[in-house]
Length: 233
View 1 (cartoon, one colour):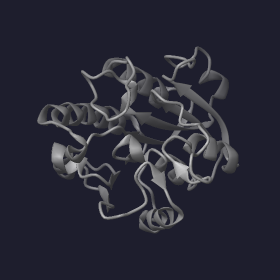
View 2 (cartoon, one colour):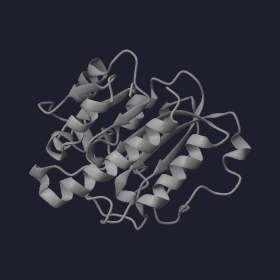
View 3 (cartoon, helix red, strand yellow):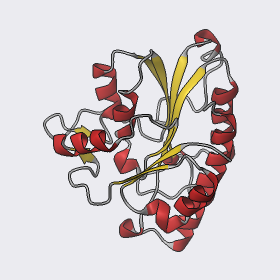
View 4 (spheres, helix red, strand yellow):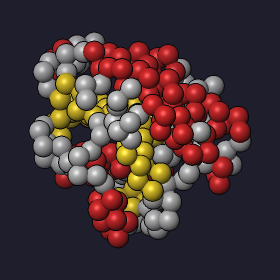
């Protein structure tokens, strides 16, 4: 298998799960960003941490990105700044992530969608699936009305219930099968998938048990197999 993924290793979760070693055996193009010692980046990303992350990103970004915990979901905003053509964002998440930042405009895991809306001129619109008041699936006709246009897909596993994901945030009620079906619709649909990223890990330092790590690894493997088999590299 000759795929290409990006691992953003902040918490050590992927190594603790065994998902990182599993990936190393199967993805010969794997890129790993070792970010465990970076300060000012958990939940909130201060300007110094943002500059360090930007400097660490590979010149050519893999199209499948693993972002670690939901604490680092703001990485979607940083990664999408590398896009050079207009795109839509489809966000599968239990939270809308479009809140006002709490500390002086500092980018956060809860404000990055708002920051993207306000500062990325290539972003056309955002479809949020999972938060209260938002659709629970891709609305009928949404993709067809955007046929041929580009879409960036971002998945926070906290959109799923605990049998399929263990996170340190409140979680939704979707099943893994439902999430896979939505991903498949996007990957095989009439739009062009620019990139897919996944977050929602739980580190031992935040209380992850062996069972939590096992469940997250198994879900990550299922997601990797589905996405990598359909994403055009």
